[in-house]
Image 1 (cartoon, rainbow, N blue to C red):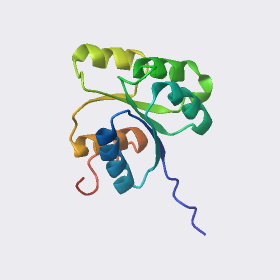
Image 2: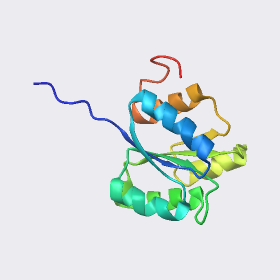
Image 3: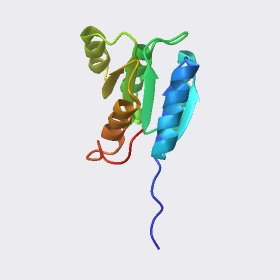
Image 4: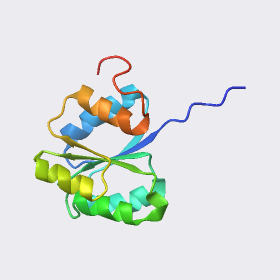
Length: 136
């Protein structure tokens, strides 16, 4: 009997509903299991409880910034396998360097094209699968 295919779990940490809806659309189409929280203070406990494969992490969040969340995830050895894709409307090179220096696995500037997001998620969750598949 064939083993069931493991569905990757993604946690969306995004306070803007319209962006969260776009993320939900892409992740649903790609077949990923996902959940969302809209508050930075709730992110770390949720990440520790669920240990998702990937966190789509907004930089600018209420209460706790995405940078602080990223840094705390990277300081927790139990979360070493969690991938982090940071998202920000301030897509400057300095912001990107800061996110990557704190341990983010990728960085995407908002607004993003759905295909660009899908490719970034695939690159982190399914190495070798970028660019494969249909249109977003």
